[in-house]
Length: 289
Image 1: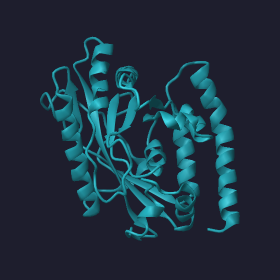
Image 2 (image 1 turned 180 degrees about the horizontal axis):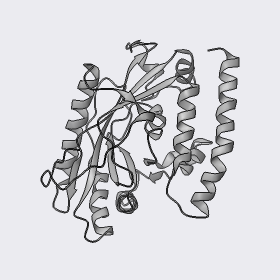
Image 3 (image 1 turned 30 degrees about the vertical axis):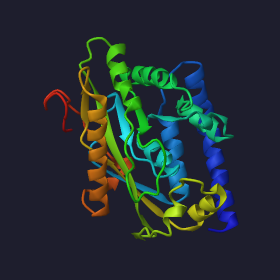
């Protein structure tokens, strides 16, 4: 991609933000509304401009059905890909709140920040997440706690899964909360399987420099992202959060294996039609959509 090509795409993205950002800000600040369609549209504009195609398999939560989404984490591009699917918010490290531009975008997406240096922060964040879930929102938690290179899945952390119990406490009479495993992978670039050398152009992890990474991203050609919604886990008042987290990790691991093996029906994410999930018909712990 030439410098001119990059420049006009950035300009087009800035124009999209100028159109979508102010109404979103007003909705959040003046009316206190949850994250709406504006972030979804902005993410889709980004994907279209930079030739990133998102497909998905499985069944996502239905509209208005709150869920704590437990996902693996490969790249900053995960946020754009997942954010293009439906209205939702993310849990992120508190350092992001000080990043120029990124902090503004995160605020418009109603990101929940956690200070990992403070032990009491987990309880505070869990309460905030719990209220969101009780109100029927989707909250995405990158359960590995960091990014990886996409070749292997890191252990899921269970500390913030306690937000599901907070949601039960926030809404008396609610019997269970949905934990939604979500696997994200980058299987192809330029129509071919992603090589190990190309992973550094997609995954951003460790001490990688941002500028060379972004250069590789914009110049390397079209990227295919696949998002797989796994079997949801019904979290009840008596559910062990560590057991539930381990079950979500196992489901994401299975989904990643299926993606790498080419199994599962792919469909364009923008055309997906979520079906309503019934968490009351399949037993106390695991429910199939």
